[in-house]
Length: 195
Image 1: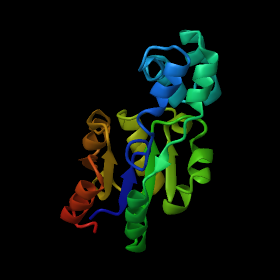
Image 2: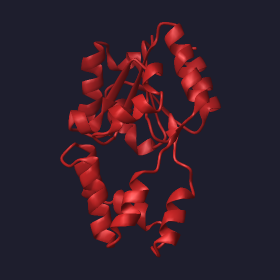
Image 3: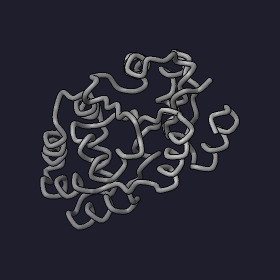
Image 4: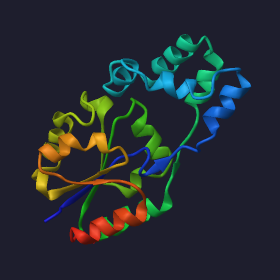
């Protein structure tokens, strides 16, 4: 029996508008895609998502790598928009007694972000890799969720928009779902008896 549903944050609960980074790059004379490519390159991405550096330091490193500090600062201020349909689904799950949580490969500002965006009030727990020190798909971050919730892996349903992030959860017995939209997620939750 599923007792908890755990959502990834970016790409599931909230989304960035697709063209905003390109607009910044055009204004600053950068190659299209260069901001994201630099931000999500290794080892920089792992350093910020495991809490070894702060989000502010991450943004500065992006600016340094591209010799474009102003563009990186502007990029760093882009704000994703929560999906009301997902938040409504989270509320429906909680109303049925199901624990709802977020598990994100995030930065040190995630707690403030989800509070400011009104997301925090829709979930019971926020698990952030920058605080935990491990990133998905490492089994250790999923074990942290198990320990914190006090339930077993097979009692947890986990959804992420990146299929590569599911492996550690699968290894620990989680019921997993590759997120490709709210309707498919709802159908998967119905099939597993959560809804």
